[in-house]
Length: 123
Image 1 (cartoon, helix red, strand yellow):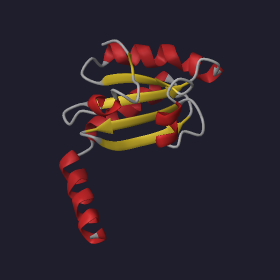
Image 2 (cartoon, one colour):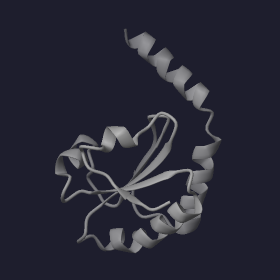
Image 3 (spheres, one colour):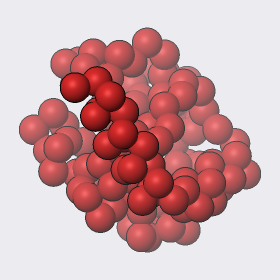
Image 4 (cartoon, one colour):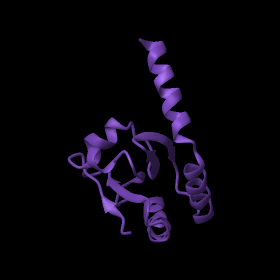
């Protein structure tokens, strides 16, 4: 699957309940971002069942601000509309593969249960 470009207008639609979405927040002037791009694209080709997306922080300043992006590249992973990973820094290919394996192994029923319990405590 090709890497898609996300904007504020289509962000919510991209974070679908039945999908895993890995997002790379980047900028054209960022050297580490440009170096990470081929690794990200290769992972997208290897894992067609996962949505790989990029957010250009220069063009989507409001979206970057909404997610409190302070350093780029920053990777975020959403699964079933839950953010499971958020970290700045380019990952080597092996580390990205390890992250994908870990994300796939998460018991989302347990995650949703914990979220519901925490929300009930807050109310």
